[in-house]
Amino acid sequence: MTIYIPPVRDMQFALHDVLKLSQSGLPGHDDLDRDFTEAVLDAAGKLAAEVLAPLNAVGDRQGCRLENGVVRTPDGFDQAFQAMKEGGWTALDCDPDYGGQGMPYVLGVATGEMFVSANMAFNMYQGLTHGAYSAIHAHGTNEQKAMYLPKMVSCDWTGTMNLTEPHCGTDLGMLRTRAEPQEDGSYLITGTKIFISAGDHDLAENVIHLVLAKAPGGGEGTRGISLFIVPKFLVNADGSLGERNGVTVGALEEKMGIHGNATCVMNYDGAKGWLLGDLHKGMRAMFTMMNEARVGVGLQGYACAVPAYQNAVAYAKDRLQGRAVTGAANPSGPADPLIVHPDIRRSLMDQKSFLEGARMLALWGAHLIDKGHSGDADAEGLVSLLTPVIKGFLTDKGFETAVLAQQVYGGHGYIEEQGMSQFVRDARITMIYEGANGVQALDLVGRKLAQDGGKHVMAFFELVKGFCKDNAESAIAADFVAPLKAASKDLQTAAMFFMERGMKNPNDALSGSYDFMHLFGHVALGFMWAQMAAAAQAALDAGTGDAAFLKTKLATGVYYMKRQLPMTATHLARIQSGAAPVMELEAEAF
Image (cartoon, rainbow, N blue to C red; front, side, top):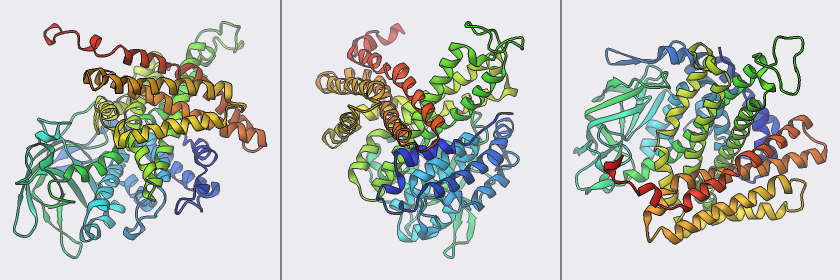
């Protein structure tokens, strides 16, 4: 059985030493001192480690099953879901007007990491509900909010997003699901959606589907798409449940991972739905949900690898194999533990330095979202720029990290009883759903760089430049500031290459987009590590905090700056090679 240890201390360091949460001046943040957030994180960690994590392997083995039109979740999921609801975790950062606790989003992300690490498939039931809640909260009428949100905040009702169809995924302009207007203001929704996570289950009384469909008069492509609220059970005026709507589960997908979550084929056969937001403006409303979901998937990408790394460390300390080349470290035993070997150390340091940097980036992104919610348009623009980086880079590297952790086990990592393969299989989906990572890279280069005249990428460069200037003479200058400046220069050079070549030959930009996303990701993590190093060094100089923890933080950061951040030069060289090596072959030559 695998272990999971909630990383509360590391989260506390990120929230208070780096982000300085209670001093941010944001509404509702004044009371978020260390004692308060520690109490919240400890309670969430206890639920994650003691209730959710033991069910992770159960969900993987049993999966979900479709019985007479009803989806059954794995053993124990219903009791765990009830415990999550009773603890108020589904309502943590939701609007108090609808039963939420009104906590900042950044605290929801911190607790969410622990829930994902403990049991990603389980957490998706309430995680997707939060996205649907956000879309209705942002675009719904007052009547729609009053009808749906209180039950969704409590997760008595859960939510989904329905985009993909059998013939179209990312190209939503091709979707065929139709919405026929009715005299009472409702619409009848007809069509088939696939890959619908948590599309149906036995954990909640009702499922509120948000469905993209085309209503008459909208024109071709995405311009004709509208978004509709389609409940599994119709809701009466008094809030009670009425008759079953015309939506059914056609099948459950057989998947590589996340077996404990029901991934459904949803059939809409004249199902009654109500317009959410403006007619023919469904993409705008759906992107409220998708942008939140993409940040959440970025979190999933690295959070899946957290327990993989923790188990790999435990195995490396316990498993005896070979002798250290510098002399026996365990002379009384038949061999030394794996962790004495440099290549194992390299692997574990790759994992540790990525995961702690990724956590910091996710929390910073969530903090920017909180700033955006308070009316800071610059923060909102910056996190919009960073969203494809958070989603694409963190999931690519998160999967890679889970594989590295599995590799520490050697052949035992390939055996199901060790549990390592589940982390790898579960992490794999994060690179695909909510927009495959190639699409994230295209979004970054094709849309986000030029957004608002390039204002937001320039703001990122200024943040890095300002930090480097402020710390040019500090104790961290050589190990952190100098490599960060070099990496940031690589990123700026790549952006200039796109500006100079992209208009003449768009393929020059598009061929380098994936490398640019990873280049940006490394610079972003380098920036996170530099800020963490500054905070750790300041605490050490002041004689506050846990000295051993702070020194470990600095050593881990130095590893990232020396062993991972130099990859920016490789990505830049690939970008500057242009489209020719990529596009040279005719299609028939493949």
